[in-house]
Length: 420
Ligand code: HSE
Image 1 (tube, helix red, strand yellow):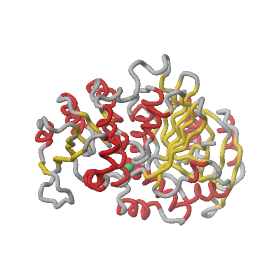
Image 2 (tube, protein in one colour):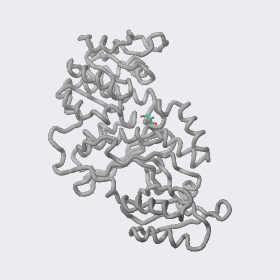
Image 3 (cartoon, protein in one colour):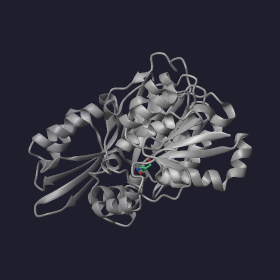
Image 4 (tube, protein in one colour):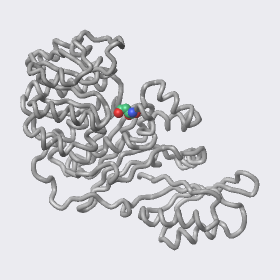
């Protein structure tokens, strides 16, 4: 019998207990041993919960219990779970976590602490989609050329409703919170941080890149306007929040931001709260993973798969899937060197010379305009909506700040990167 203790018995923890009971036969057959949840940690012992395991409010009760083989960490947060997980590993217990923020900050320290002890985290990225397994096992023969993922269901749900049902941002954010999709602090979702945590985990497995959230470009969906949506529809784009990892020579770009992406790309068709991840390997070509990125049962499905794996193999392989540096000399690309196409939106006075000034500022930075729409708005004002050919992030940022200070635009221009 493999005994499991769950630190943080909320929606996912409750699903873990329920699925271990509901699917006991098949899980035992696959694991080769019965997996039994025996105890859980909660903050509030007086709250009624739908589980029959023994509950405590002190993680040490589980960590000091030598009969518990595996600790499931489902607390959320960073430093508190880090202390719990570290202690569990030091006590020789295997660990399974669904905690992406913990891994975004501490995955390399935890890998060192874990050594040969199994440390698994399939549920931390894209909930029920086995993307960690795919990258760490299924695609290991490949150099990974790129990963592009819709890995935040809240943003995807919101963008879908904003674009296809014209529901305003604030209303749809509230709805996403009520439906339980959003993080406790929804700025983690709409600001792109949740997606960044997940991207950093994927980038470690694919490239061995050791970066923290503050090292990479992270933007959210807060600035998407009705005009942007109109432009996207006019030019047959979807708007998505993507986590992107791309290898170019010996640099890896890591970035999270909203993008305009052609409607006929498969990933553009991932709608609602679903997640979708495209991985391109140099030998396998493109692979696409689609499924539920959150939710009790989908996330618990991934947690239990990890427990079964631990039951089968005992001690695990290295947490991030490699022991030596993956590729010598491969480093994180500077944010300034990112090259892509851009969509720009700016409000200007509708008078002669304005368009010429905008074009001059862009031209001086070697930024070439590809398409343009001018939409009259309030009296004597117009919205300029334009897309560029490929240019450098540094040039576009400088051009935007020049536009803002030039007096030509009436408020700070907005920008969305185009992914095609
Ligand atoms: N808030 C996250 C999302 C939950 O919307 O995708 C799953 O990590």
